[in-house]
Image (cartoon, rainbow, N blue to C red; front, side, top):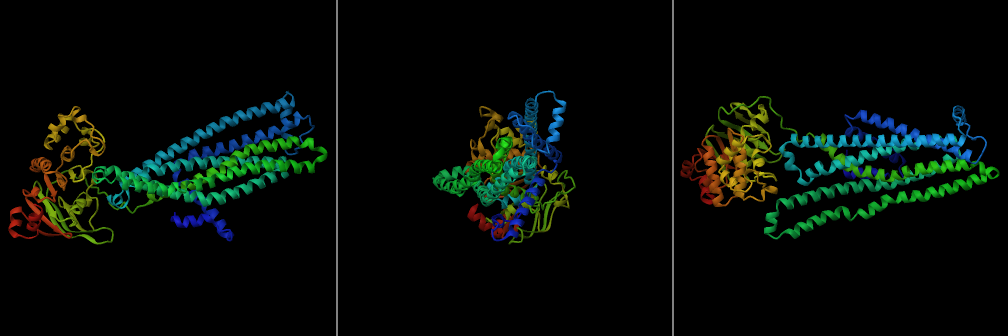
Length: 618
Protein backbone atom coordinates (compact mmCIF):
# COMPACT_ATOMS: atom_id res chain seq x y z
CA UNK A 1 0.00 0.00 0.00
CA UNK A 2 3.03 2.27 0.34
CA UNK A 3 3.89 4.77 2.96
CA UNK A 4 2.12 8.01 3.69
CA UNK A 5 4.76 10.20 2.13
CA UNK A 6 4.64 8.40 -1.19
CA UNK A 7 0.86 8.43 -1.17
CA UNK A 8 0.62 12.14 -0.46
CA UNK A 9 3.09 12.91 -3.23
CA UNK A 10 1.23 10.56 -5.51
CA UNK A 11 -2.10 12.32 -4.93
CA UNK A 12 -0.65 15.74 -5.70
CA UNK A 13 -0.38 15.15 -9.53
CA UNK A 14 2.03 17.84 -10.72
CA UNK A 15 0.35 19.95 -13.42
CA UNK A 16 3.45 19.87 -15.61
CA UNK A 17 3.46 16.10 -15.86
CA UNK A 18 0.44 14.80 -17.81
CA UNK A 19 1.67 11.22 -17.70
CA UNK A 20 1.96 11.37 -13.92
CA UNK A 21 -1.60 12.72 -13.76
CA UNK A 22 -2.95 9.84 -15.83
CA UNK A 23 -0.98 7.25 -13.88
CA UNK A 24 -2.12 8.81 -10.62
CA UNK A 25 -5.76 8.72 -11.68
CA UNK A 26 -5.50 5.10 -12.82
CA UNK A 27 -3.72 4.13 -9.62
CA UNK A 28 -6.38 5.78 -7.49
CA UNK A 29 -9.19 3.96 -9.31
CA UNK A 30 -7.24 0.70 -9.11
CA UNK A 31 -6.64 1.19 -5.39
CA UNK A 32 -10.31 1.97 -4.83
CA UNK A 33 -11.28 -1.18 -6.70
CA UNK A 34 -8.78 -3.34 -4.79
CA UNK A 35 -9.91 -2.00 -1.42
CA UNK A 36 -13.55 -2.43 -2.37
CA UNK A 37 -12.88 -5.95 -3.60
CA UNK A 38 -10.94 -6.85 -0.46
CA UNK A 39 -13.60 -5.68 1.98
CA UNK A 40 -16.53 -7.05 -0.04
CA UNK A 41 -15.24 -10.61 -0.41
CA UNK A 42 -18.00 -13.06 0.30
CA UNK A 43 -20.71 -10.56 -0.62
CA UNK A 44 -20.64 -10.70 -4.43
CA UNK A 45 -24.37 -11.42 -4.59
CA UNK A 46 -24.99 -8.20 -2.68
CA UNK A 47 -22.80 -6.32 -5.15
CA UNK A 48 -24.64 -7.75 -8.17
CA UNK A 49 -27.95 -6.77 -6.59
CA UNK A 50 -26.63 -3.24 -5.96
CA UNK A 51 -25.44 -3.05 -9.56
CA UNK A 52 -28.86 -4.16 -10.83
CA UNK A 53 -30.74 -1.63 -8.72
CA UNK A 54 -28.29 1.14 -9.69
CA UNK A 55 -28.96 0.56 -13.38
CA UNK A 56 -32.71 0.28 -12.73
CA UNK A 57 -32.63 3.53 -10.76
CA UNK A 58 -30.82 5.26 -13.60
CA UNK A 59 -33.45 4.07 -16.08
CA UNK A 60 -36.28 5.24 -13.80
CA UNK A 61 -34.74 8.71 -13.40
CA UNK A 62 -34.17 8.97 -17.15
CA UNK A 63 -37.77 8.07 -17.98
CA UNK A 64 -38.98 10.88 -15.74
CA UNK A 65 -37.03 13.31 -17.94
CA UNK A 66 -38.17 11.68 -21.16
CA UNK A 67 -41.81 11.91 -20.00
CA UNK A 68 -41.54 15.50 -18.77
CA UNK A 69 -40.85 16.88 -22.25
CA UNK A 70 -44.18 15.81 -23.83
CA UNK A 71 -46.02 17.07 -20.71
CA UNK A 72 -44.55 20.55 -21.19
CA UNK A 73 -45.01 20.33 -24.94
CA UNK A 74 -48.71 19.47 -24.60
CA UNK A 75 -49.18 22.12 -21.90
CA UNK A 76 -48.09 24.82 -24.38
CA UNK A 77 -50.27 23.17 -27.06
CA UNK A 78 -47.30 22.72 -29.35
CA UNK A 79 -47.73 20.32 -32.24
CA UNK A 80 -45.19 17.50 -32.39
CA UNK A 81 -42.46 16.88 -29.92
CA UNK A 82 -39.64 17.84 -32.19
CA UNK A 83 -37.64 14.92 -30.79
CA UNK A 84 -37.09 12.51 -33.65
CA UNK A 85 -35.48 9.85 -31.47
CA UNK A 86 -38.34 9.68 -28.92
CA UNK A 87 -41.29 10.26 -31.31
CA UNK A 88 -41.90 6.50 -31.84
CA UNK A 89 -42.08 5.98 -28.07
CA UNK A 90 -44.53 8.85 -27.61
CA UNK A 91 -46.70 7.64 -30.51
CA UNK A 92 -46.73 4.09 -29.16
CA UNK A 93 -47.92 5.29 -25.74
CA UNK A 94 -50.67 7.51 -27.18
CA UNK A 95 -51.90 4.68 -29.41
CA UNK A 96 -52.81 2.45 -26.48
CA UNK A 97 -53.99 5.09 -23.98
CA UNK A 98 -57.30 6.94 -24.46
CA UNK A 99 -56.62 9.85 -22.10
CA UNK A 100 -55.64 13.31 -23.34
CA UNK A 101 -51.94 13.63 -24.11
CA UNK A 102 -51.04 15.80 -21.11
CA UNK A 103 -52.97 13.52 -18.72
CA UNK A 104 -51.45 10.35 -20.18
CA UNK A 105 -47.87 11.50 -19.82
CA UNK A 106 -48.56 13.05 -16.39
CA UNK A 107 -49.94 9.73 -15.10
CA UNK A 108 -46.94 7.87 -16.51
CA UNK A 109 -44.65 10.49 -14.98
CA UNK A 110 -46.24 10.01 -11.54
CA UNK A 111 -45.98 6.23 -11.91
CA UNK A 112 -42.27 6.42 -12.63
CA UNK A 113 -41.77 8.83 -9.71
CA UNK A 114 -43.36 6.28 -7.36
CA UNK A 115 -41.35 3.41 -8.89
CA UNK A 116 -38.17 5.48 -8.56
CA UNK A 117 -38.96 6.04 -4.89
CA UNK A 118 -39.50 2.32 -4.29
CA UNK A 119 -36.32 1.34 -6.14
CA UNK A 120 -34.38 4.00 -4.19
CA UNK A 121 -35.66 2.61 -0.88
CA UNK A 122 -34.74 -0.95 -1.89
CA UNK A 123 -31.31 0.21 -3.04
CA UNK A 124 -30.56 2.08 0.19
CA UNK A 125 -31.80 -0.82 2.32
CA UNK A 126 -29.64 -3.29 0.42
CA UNK A 127 -26.67 -0.91 0.60
CA UNK A 128 -27.00 -0.57 4.38
CA UNK A 129 -27.29 -4.35 4.82
CA UNK A 130 -24.19 -4.78 2.68
CA UNK A 131 -22.26 -2.22 4.78
CA UNK A 132 -23.41 -3.81 8.05
CA UNK A 133 -22.34 -7.29 6.94
CA UNK A 134 -18.93 -6.09 5.80
CA UNK A 135 -18.32 -4.18 9.05
CA UNK A 136 -19.31 -7.14 11.24
CA UNK A 137 -17.17 -9.51 9.18
CA UNK A 138 -14.15 -7.20 9.18
CA UNK A 139 -14.33 -6.47 12.91
CA UNK A 140 -14.55 -10.22 13.53
CA UNK A 141 -11.50 -10.78 11.31
CA UNK A 142 -9.56 -8.06 13.15
CA UNK A 143 -10.25 -9.60 16.54
CA UNK A 144 -9.46 -13.07 15.21
CA UNK A 145 -6.20 -11.61 13.88
CA UNK A 146 -5.41 -10.30 17.37
CA UNK A 147 -6.29 -13.68 18.87
CA UNK A 148 -4.00 -15.50 16.44
CA UNK A 149 -1.16 -12.98 16.70
CA UNK A 150 1.96 -13.77 18.68
CA UNK A 151 2.47 -12.13 22.05
CA UNK A 152 5.25 -10.21 20.30
CA UNK A 153 2.62 -8.13 18.44
CA UNK A 154 1.29 -6.67 21.69
CA UNK A 155 4.83 -5.94 22.83
CA UNK A 156 5.72 -4.15 19.59
CA UNK A 157 2.45 -2.24 19.12
CA UNK A 158 1.23 0.74 21.12
CA UNK A 159 -2.00 0.10 22.99
CA UNK A 160 -3.53 3.15 21.32
CA UNK A 161 -2.79 1.67 17.90
CA UNK A 162 -4.39 -1.65 18.88
CA UNK A 163 -7.51 0.14 20.10
CA UNK A 164 -7.61 2.24 16.93
CA UNK A 165 -7.33 -0.84 14.71
CA UNK A 166 -10.16 -2.65 16.49
CA UNK A 167 -12.56 0.15 17.47
CA UNK A 168 -12.03 3.21 15.29
CA UNK A 169 -10.64 2.10 11.92
CA UNK A 170 -13.60 -0.15 10.99
CA UNK A 171 -15.95 2.85 11.23
CA UNK A 172 -14.15 4.26 8.20
CA UNK A 173 -15.06 1.11 6.27
CA UNK A 174 -18.70 2.10 6.73
CA UNK A 175 -17.98 5.60 5.41
CA UNK A 176 -16.02 4.20 2.47
CA UNK A 177 -18.63 1.61 1.46
CA UNK A 178 -21.58 3.95 1.92
CA UNK A 179 -19.86 6.61 -0.16
CA UNK A 180 -18.75 4.09 -2.79
CA UNK A 181 -22.22 2.65 -3.33
CA UNK A 182 -23.85 6.09 -3.41
CA UNK A 183 -21.18 7.37 -5.79
CA UNK A 184 -21.66 4.39 -8.10
CA UNK A 185 -25.43 4.88 -8.11
CA UNK A 186 -25.00 8.59 -8.84
CA UNK A 187 -22.62 7.88 -11.72
CA UNK A 188 -25.10 5.44 -13.29
CA UNK A 189 -27.96 7.97 -12.99
CA UNK A 190 -25.80 10.80 -14.38
CA UNK A 191 -24.70 8.70 -17.36
CA UNK A 192 -28.22 7.57 -18.26
CA UNK A 193 -29.56 11.13 -17.93
CA UNK A 194 -26.74 12.51 -20.09
CA UNK A 195 -27.47 9.92 -22.78
CA UNK A 196 -31.15 10.89 -22.73
CA UNK A 197 -30.31 14.59 -22.89
CA UNK A 198 -28.00 14.00 -25.84
CA UNK A 199 -30.92 12.64 -27.86
CA UNK A 200 -33.14 15.51 -26.70
CA UNK A 201 -30.66 18.30 -27.51
CA UNK A 202 -26.98 17.68 -28.28
CA UNK A 203 -26.14 21.37 -27.88
CA UNK A 204 -27.82 21.70 -24.49
CA UNK A 205 -26.14 18.50 -23.34
CA UNK A 206 -22.70 19.80 -24.39
CA UNK A 207 -23.23 23.01 -22.36
CA UNK A 208 -24.39 21.07 -19.31
CA UNK A 209 -21.70 18.43 -19.69
CA UNK A 210 -18.96 21.06 -20.07
CA UNK A 211 -19.94 22.67 -16.78
CA UNK A 212 -19.93 19.28 -15.10
CA UNK A 213 -16.43 18.48 -16.38
CA UNK A 214 -15.10 21.77 -15.00
CA UNK A 215 -16.65 20.99 -11.63
CA UNK A 216 -15.31 17.42 -11.50
CA UNK A 217 -11.78 18.64 -12.29
CA UNK A 218 -12.08 21.22 -9.52
CA UNK A 219 -13.34 18.63 -7.03
CA UNK A 220 -10.57 16.18 -7.92
CA UNK A 221 -7.82 18.76 -7.58
CA UNK A 222 -9.08 20.12 -4.27
CA UNK A 223 -10.28 16.83 -2.78
CA UNK A 224 -7.23 14.77 -3.65
CA UNK A 225 -4.89 17.32 -2.15
CA UNK A 226 -6.83 17.74 1.08
CA UNK A 227 -8.86 14.67 2.00
CA UNK A 228 -6.13 12.03 2.05
CA UNK A 229 -3.95 14.34 4.13
CA UNK A 230 -6.64 15.01 6.70
CA UNK A 231 -7.46 11.29 6.86
CA UNK A 232 -3.84 10.43 7.65
CA UNK A 233 -3.58 13.21 10.28
CA UNK A 234 -6.90 12.17 11.83
CA UNK A 235 -5.78 8.54 12.06
CA UNK A 236 -2.56 9.54 13.79
CA UNK A 237 -4.39 11.89 16.17
CA UNK A 238 -7.08 9.39 17.21
CA UNK A 239 -4.49 6.66 17.75
CA UNK A 240 -2.45 8.99 19.96
CA UNK A 241 -5.58 10.06 21.87
CA UNK A 242 -6.46 6.42 22.57
CA UNK A 243 -2.93 5.76 23.81
CA UNK A 244 -2.89 8.76 26.17
CA UNK A 245 -6.36 8.05 27.63
CA UNK A 246 -5.58 4.34 28.07
CA UNK A 247 -2.29 5.07 29.83
CA UNK A 248 -3.89 7.74 32.01
CA UNK A 249 -6.65 5.39 33.19
CA UNK A 250 -4.25 2.51 33.83
CA UNK A 251 -1.83 4.64 35.80
CA UNK A 252 -4.34 6.81 37.64
CA UNK A 253 -3.17 5.77 41.13
CA UNK A 254 0.48 6.48 40.43
CA UNK A 255 -0.34 9.66 38.50
CA UNK A 256 -2.43 11.03 41.35
CA UNK A 257 0.23 10.03 43.86
CA UNK A 258 2.73 12.40 42.20
CA UNK A 259 0.10 15.00 41.25
CA UNK A 260 0.94 14.34 37.61
CA UNK A 261 -2.49 15.02 36.07
CA UNK A 262 -1.34 18.28 34.51
CA UNK A 263 1.35 16.50 32.49
CA UNK A 264 -1.13 14.00 31.06
CA UNK A 265 -3.58 16.80 30.31
CA UNK A 266 -0.86 18.55 28.33
CA UNK A 267 -0.09 15.30 26.47
CA UNK A 268 -3.76 14.87 25.58
CA UNK A 269 -4.09 18.51 24.51
CA UNK A 270 -1.07 18.10 22.27
CA UNK A 271 -2.60 15.08 20.50
CA UNK A 272 -5.87 16.99 20.06
CA UNK A 273 -4.14 19.87 18.32
CA UNK A 274 -2.44 17.48 15.88
CA UNK A 275 -5.77 17.15 14.05
CA UNK A 276 -8.06 19.95 15.16
CA UNK A 277 -5.62 22.77 14.39
CA UNK A 278 -5.95 21.79 10.73
CA UNK A 279 -9.68 21.03 10.88
CA UNK A 280 -11.05 24.43 9.80
CA UNK A 281 -8.67 24.80 6.87
CA UNK A 282 -9.26 21.29 5.55
CA UNK A 283 -13.04 21.20 6.00
CA UNK A 284 -13.52 24.68 4.54
CA UNK A 285 -11.55 23.64 1.46
CA UNK A 286 -13.62 20.46 1.14
CA UNK A 287 -16.93 22.34 1.18
CA UNK A 288 -15.90 25.07 -1.26
CA UNK A 289 -16.62 23.09 -4.48
CA UNK A 290 -20.26 22.47 -3.49
CA UNK A 291 -20.89 26.19 -3.12
CA UNK A 292 -19.14 26.89 -6.41
CA UNK A 293 -21.32 24.34 -8.16
CA UNK A 294 -24.51 26.17 -7.19
CA UNK A 295 -23.11 29.33 -8.73
CA UNK A 296 -21.95 27.52 -11.87
CA UNK A 297 -25.33 25.78 -12.21
CA UNK A 298 -27.48 28.91 -12.16
CA UNK A 299 -25.06 30.79 -14.40
CA UNK A 300 -25.11 27.82 -16.80
CA UNK A 301 -28.92 27.77 -16.94
CA UNK A 302 -29.02 31.51 -17.68
CA UNK A 303 -26.32 31.18 -20.35
CA UNK A 304 -28.18 28.31 -22.02
CA UNK A 305 -31.39 30.37 -22.16
CA UNK A 306 -29.51 33.32 -23.70
CA UNK A 307 -27.78 31.13 -26.29
CA UNK A 308 -31.01 29.34 -27.24
CA UNK A 309 -32.84 32.69 -27.48
CA UNK A 310 -30.40 34.00 -30.08
CA UNK A 311 -30.31 30.71 -31.95
CA UNK A 312 -34.09 30.28 -32.01
CA UNK A 313 -35.40 33.84 -31.67
CA UNK A 314 -38.16 33.30 -34.23
CA UNK A 315 -39.59 30.25 -32.41
CA UNK A 316 -38.38 30.68 -28.85
CA UNK A 317 -41.74 29.58 -27.43
CA UNK A 318 -41.34 26.15 -29.02
CA UNK A 319 -38.09 25.47 -27.16
CA UNK A 320 -39.48 26.36 -23.70
CA UNK A 321 -40.27 22.62 -23.10
CA UNK A 322 -36.64 21.92 -23.97
CA UNK A 323 -35.42 24.52 -21.48
CA UNK A 324 -37.78 23.17 -18.82
CA UNK A 325 -36.62 19.61 -19.44
CA UNK A 326 -32.97 20.62 -19.14
CA UNK A 327 -33.69 22.62 -16.00
CA UNK A 328 -35.43 19.60 -14.51
CA UNK A 329 -32.52 17.37 -15.57
CA UNK A 330 -30.06 19.79 -14.03
CA UNK A 331 -31.99 19.67 -10.76
CA UNK A 332 -31.74 15.88 -10.92
CA UNK A 333 -28.00 16.04 -11.56
CA UNK A 334 -27.13 18.94 -9.26
CA UNK A 335 -27.38 17.07 -5.92
CA UNK A 336 -25.43 14.18 -7.37
CA UNK A 337 -22.71 16.43 -8.77
CA UNK A 338 -22.63 18.32 -5.48
CA UNK A 339 -22.22 15.05 -3.60
CA UNK A 340 -19.14 14.22 -5.68
CA UNK A 341 -17.14 16.62 -3.55
CA UNK A 342 -18.25 15.23 -0.19
CA UNK A 343 -18.24 11.58 -1.29
CA UNK A 344 -14.80 11.95 -2.84
CA UNK A 345 -13.53 13.58 0.36
CA UNK A 346 -15.05 10.88 2.59
CA UNK A 347 -13.47 8.09 0.52
CA UNK A 348 -10.04 9.72 0.48
CA UNK A 349 -10.36 10.49 4.17
CA UNK A 350 -11.04 6.80 4.81
CA UNK A 351 -8.14 5.49 2.70
CA UNK A 352 -5.43 5.67 5.43
CA UNK A 353 -7.56 3.68 7.88
CA UNK A 354 -8.62 1.13 5.25
CA UNK A 355 -5.00 0.66 4.24
CA UNK A 356 -4.04 0.24 7.90
CA UNK A 357 -6.62 -2.53 8.36
CA UNK A 358 -5.58 -4.13 5.06
CA UNK A 359 -1.95 -4.21 6.19
CA UNK A 360 -2.94 -5.58 9.60
CA UNK A 361 -5.05 -8.42 8.19
CA UNK A 362 -2.39 -9.37 5.62
CA UNK A 363 0.64 -9.02 7.88
CA UNK A 364 2.01 -12.45 8.79
CA UNK A 365 5.05 -11.24 10.75
CA UNK A 366 3.27 -11.95 14.02
CA UNK A 367 2.02 -15.43 13.22
CA UNK A 368 5.23 -17.35 13.80
CA UNK A 369 4.02 -19.49 16.71
CA UNK A 370 2.80 -22.72 15.13
CA UNK A 371 0.32 -24.80 17.07
CA UNK A 372 1.21 -28.45 17.66
CA UNK A 373 -1.08 -31.36 16.90
CA UNK A 374 -0.45 -33.63 19.90
CA UNK A 375 -3.03 -33.24 22.70
CA UNK A 376 -1.47 -32.68 26.11
CA UNK A 377 -3.26 -34.90 28.63
CA UNK A 378 -1.12 -34.74 31.78
CA UNK A 379 2.37 -34.01 33.08
CA UNK A 380 4.19 -37.33 33.39
CA UNK A 381 7.80 -36.23 33.88
CA UNK A 382 10.05 -33.25 34.48
CA UNK A 383 10.06 -30.15 32.26
CA UNK A 384 13.53 -29.73 30.82
CA UNK A 385 15.07 -26.64 29.17
CA UNK A 386 17.71 -28.27 26.97
CA UNK A 387 20.41 -25.85 25.70
CA UNK A 388 17.79 -23.18 25.09
CA UNK A 389 18.68 -19.93 23.37
CA UNK A 390 16.43 -17.01 22.57
CA UNK A 391 16.86 -13.66 20.88
CA UNK A 392 14.29 -10.99 20.12
CA UNK A 393 14.27 -10.84 16.32
CA UNK A 394 17.95 -10.60 15.40
CA UNK A 395 18.88 -8.41 18.31
CA UNK A 396 20.91 -9.16 21.42
CA UNK A 397 20.64 -12.71 22.74
CA UNK A 398 18.46 -12.73 25.87
CA UNK A 399 18.79 -16.41 26.78
CA UNK A 400 22.02 -18.29 26.08
CA UNK A 401 22.63 -22.05 26.44
CA UNK A 402 20.04 -22.39 29.23
CA UNK A 403 19.75 -25.76 30.96
CA UNK A 404 17.09 -25.98 33.63
CA UNK A 405 14.80 -28.68 35.04
CA UNK A 406 11.37 -28.07 36.58
CA UNK A 407 10.85 -31.18 38.68
CA UNK A 408 7.45 -32.86 38.65
CA UNK A 409 5.48 -32.35 41.89
CA UNK A 410 8.27 -30.22 43.31
CA UNK A 411 8.85 -26.51 43.78
CA UNK A 412 11.44 -25.05 41.42
CA UNK A 413 12.49 -21.42 41.76
CA UNK A 414 14.30 -19.06 39.44
CA UNK A 415 15.98 -15.91 40.78
CA UNK A 416 18.26 -13.20 39.48
CA UNK A 417 18.61 -9.46 39.18
CA UNK A 418 16.26 -7.41 36.98
CA UNK A 419 16.92 -7.97 33.28
CA UNK A 420 18.64 -11.33 33.79
CA UNK A 421 16.00 -13.14 31.66
CA UNK A 422 13.71 -14.69 34.29
CA UNK A 423 10.42 -13.52 32.77
CA UNK A 424 11.64 -14.52 29.33
CA UNK A 425 12.03 -18.09 30.58
CA UNK A 426 8.38 -18.06 31.68
CA UNK A 427 7.34 -16.57 28.31
CA UNK A 428 9.07 -19.48 26.57
CA UNK A 429 7.39 -22.02 28.84
CA UNK A 430 3.96 -20.48 28.18
CA UNK A 431 4.77 -20.31 24.45
CA UNK A 432 4.44 -16.57 24.17
CA UNK A 433 7.66 -16.99 22.20
CA UNK A 434 9.41 -19.98 20.69
CA UNK A 435 13.05 -20.78 21.39
CA UNK A 436 15.63 -19.72 18.83
CA UNK A 437 17.73 -22.81 19.52
CA UNK A 438 17.48 -25.86 21.74
CA UNK A 439 14.29 -27.45 23.09
CA UNK A 440 11.88 -27.34 25.98
CA UNK A 441 11.00 -30.96 26.70
CA UNK A 442 7.69 -31.89 28.36
CA UNK A 443 7.14 -35.62 28.90
CA UNK A 444 10.26 -36.05 26.77
CA UNK A 445 8.60 -34.29 23.81
CA UNK A 446 9.38 -30.88 22.34
CA UNK A 447 6.79 -28.49 23.74
CA UNK A 448 6.16 -27.17 20.23
CA UNK A 449 4.61 -30.54 19.30
CA UNK A 450 1.74 -30.09 21.77
CA UNK A 451 -1.54 -28.37 21.06
CA UNK A 452 -1.28 -25.01 22.86
CA UNK A 453 -4.86 -25.07 24.09
CA UNK A 454 -4.65 -28.47 25.75
CA UNK A 455 -1.23 -27.65 27.25
CA UNK A 456 -2.35 -24.31 28.69
CA UNK A 457 -5.45 -25.99 30.13
CA UNK A 458 -3.06 -27.80 32.50
CA UNK A 459 -1.17 -24.62 33.44
CA UNK A 460 -2.10 -22.09 36.10
CA UNK A 461 -0.35 -18.74 35.76
CA UNK A 462 -0.16 -15.83 38.20
CA UNK A 463 1.90 -12.72 37.40
CA UNK A 464 2.89 -9.66 39.37
CA UNK A 465 0.65 -7.51 37.15
CA UNK A 466 -2.69 -9.06 38.02
CA UNK A 467 -5.42 -8.61 35.44
CA UNK A 468 -8.80 -7.98 37.05
CA UNK A 469 -11.62 -6.70 34.84
CA UNK A 470 -14.85 -4.89 35.69
CA UNK A 471 -17.12 -7.82 36.53
CA UNK A 472 -18.09 -9.87 39.56
CA UNK A 473 -15.56 -11.80 41.66
CA UNK A 474 -17.16 -15.00 40.38
CA UNK A 475 -16.59 -13.94 36.77
CA UNK A 476 -13.00 -12.96 37.51
CA UNK A 477 -12.28 -16.39 38.95
CA UNK A 478 -14.08 -18.32 36.19
CA UNK A 479 -12.50 -16.05 33.54
CA UNK A 480 -14.82 -17.05 30.71
CA UNK A 481 -15.06 -20.73 31.55
CA UNK A 482 -17.97 -22.64 33.10
CA UNK A 483 -17.35 -23.87 36.65
CA UNK A 484 -19.73 -25.04 39.35
CA UNK A 485 -20.30 -23.08 42.53
CA UNK A 486 -18.45 -25.77 44.43
CA UNK A 487 -15.39 -25.57 42.17
CA UNK A 488 -15.19 -21.77 42.47
CA UNK A 489 -15.60 -21.88 46.25
CA UNK A 490 -12.94 -24.58 46.60
CA UNK A 491 -10.46 -22.59 44.47
CA UNK A 492 -11.12 -19.49 46.58
CA UNK A 493 -10.58 -21.44 49.79
CA UNK A 494 -7.27 -22.82 48.51
CA UNK A 495 -6.26 -19.26 47.56
CA UNK A 496 -7.15 -18.03 51.06
CA UNK A 497 -9.71 -15.51 49.73
CA UNK A 498 -13.04 -17.27 50.41
CA UNK A 499 -13.57 -15.72 53.86
CA UNK A 500 -13.06 -12.23 52.47
CA UNK A 501 -15.48 -12.82 49.59
CA UNK A 502 -18.35 -14.15 51.72
CA UNK A 503 -17.96 -11.17 54.07
CA UNK A 504 -18.96 -8.82 51.23
CA UNK A 505 -22.67 -7.86 50.93
CA UNK A 506 -22.98 -9.52 47.50
CA UNK A 507 -20.43 -12.27 48.11
CA UNK A 508 -19.14 -13.81 44.90
CA UNK A 509 -21.43 -11.51 42.88
CA UNK A 510 -19.67 -8.38 44.16
CA UNK A 511 -18.45 -6.09 41.37
CA UNK A 512 -14.75 -5.20 41.58
CA UNK A 513 -14.62 -2.03 39.44
CA UNK A 514 -12.31 -1.23 36.53
CA UNK A 515 -8.99 -3.02 36.99
CA UNK A 516 -10.21 -4.18 40.41
CA UNK A 517 -10.07 -0.69 41.91
CA UNK A 518 -12.36 -1.80 44.76
CA UNK A 519 -9.84 -4.43 45.87
CA UNK A 520 -6.49 -4.23 47.60
CA UNK A 521 -3.34 -5.57 45.96
CA UNK A 522 -3.37 -8.71 48.10
CA UNK A 523 -7.05 -9.37 47.39
CA UNK A 524 -6.51 -9.05 43.66
CA UNK A 525 -3.53 -11.36 43.83
CA UNK A 526 -5.43 -14.04 45.74
CA UNK A 527 -8.31 -13.83 43.25
CA UNK A 528 -5.74 -14.38 40.51
CA UNK A 529 -4.44 -17.43 42.38
CA UNK A 530 -8.02 -18.73 42.70
CA UNK A 531 -8.43 -18.19 38.95
CA UNK A 532 -5.36 -20.33 38.33
CA UNK A 533 -6.43 -23.03 40.78
CA UNK A 534 -10.04 -23.40 39.59
CA UNK A 535 -8.60 -24.83 36.38
CA UNK A 536 -7.15 -27.67 38.48
CA UNK A 537 -3.69 -27.20 36.93
CA UNK A 538 -0.85 -29.71 36.98
CA UNK A 539 1.71 -26.94 36.49
CA UNK A 540 1.58 -23.71 38.51
CA UNK A 541 3.69 -20.80 37.25
CA UNK A 542 4.18 -17.83 39.56
CA UNK A 543 5.92 -14.80 38.07
CA UNK A 544 6.91 -12.39 40.88
CA UNK A 545 3.45 -13.05 42.36
CA UNK A 546 4.19 -11.26 45.65
CA UNK A 547 6.62 -8.57 44.55
CA UNK A 548 4.08 -5.71 44.60
CA UNK A 549 2.52 -6.55 47.98
CA UNK A 550 3.08 -5.22 51.45
CA UNK A 551 4.43 -7.59 54.12
CA UNK A 552 1.03 -8.55 55.53
CA UNK A 553 -0.52 -9.22 52.12
CA UNK A 554 2.61 -11.06 51.03
CA UNK A 555 2.39 -13.35 54.04
CA UNK A 556 -1.23 -14.25 53.29
CA UNK A 557 -0.55 -14.84 49.58
CA UNK A 558 2.60 -16.81 50.39
CA UNK A 559 0.61 -19.04 52.70
CA UNK A 560 -1.77 -19.74 49.82
CA UNK A 561 1.13 -20.53 47.49
CA UNK A 562 2.79 -22.85 50.01
CA UNK A 563 -0.45 -24.74 50.51
CA UNK A 564 -0.99 -25.21 46.77
CA UNK A 565 2.63 -26.08 46.00
CA UNK A 566 2.38 -29.24 48.07
CA UNK A 567 0.30 -30.99 45.38
CA UNK A 568 1.20 -29.23 42.11
CA UNK A 569 4.37 -28.91 40.03
CA UNK A 570 5.31 -25.33 40.82
CA UNK A 571 7.70 -22.97 39.05
CA UNK A 572 8.36 -19.69 40.85
CA UNK A 573 10.16 -16.61 39.61
CA UNK A 574 10.84 -14.40 42.60
CA UNK A 575 12.51 -11.13 43.45
CA UNK A 576 12.07 -11.46 47.20
CA UNK A 577 14.21 -14.46 47.97
CA UNK A 578 12.63 -15.03 51.37
CA UNK A 579 9.55 -16.35 49.52
CA UNK A 580 11.40 -19.24 47.87
CA UNK A 581 13.50 -20.59 50.75
CA UNK A 582 11.37 -23.73 50.84
CA UNK A 583 11.87 -24.47 47.13
CA UNK A 584 13.37 -27.87 46.33
CA UNK A 585 15.70 -26.42 43.69
CA UNK A 586 16.70 -22.79 43.14
CA UNK A 587 18.31 -21.67 39.88
CA UNK A 588 20.22 -18.39 39.73
CA UNK A 589 20.27 -16.45 36.44
CA UNK A 590 22.62 -13.74 35.29
CA UNK A 591 22.75 -12.20 31.80
CA UNK A 592 20.63 -14.97 30.27
CA UNK A 593 22.60 -17.87 31.79
CA UNK A 594 22.20 -20.19 34.76
CA UNK A 595 25.21 -19.48 36.97
CA UNK A 596 24.41 -21.76 39.95
CA UNK A 597 21.67 -23.95 41.39
CA UNK A 598 20.79 -25.98 44.46
CA UNK A 599 18.69 -25.72 47.61
CA UNK A 600 18.65 -22.57 49.72
CA UNK A 601 21.01 -24.06 52.26
CA UNK A 602 23.48 -25.32 49.65
CA UNK A 603 23.55 -22.01 47.79
CA UNK A 604 24.04 -20.03 51.00
CA UNK A 605 26.99 -22.22 51.88
CA UNK A 606 28.58 -21.53 48.48
CA UNK A 607 28.39 -17.77 49.17
CA UNK A 608 28.15 -17.12 45.46
CA UNK A 609 25.69 -15.07 43.39
CA UNK A 610 22.64 -16.34 45.31
CA UNK A 611 24.27 -15.44 48.62
CA UNK A 612 24.89 -11.89 47.35
CA UNK A 613 21.29 -11.54 46.16
CA UNK A 614 19.89 -12.92 49.40
CA UNK A 615 21.99 -10.65 51.57
CA UNK A 616 20.92 -7.66 49.47
CA UNK A 617 17.23 -8.46 48.82
CA UNK A 618 16.25 -11.38 51.04
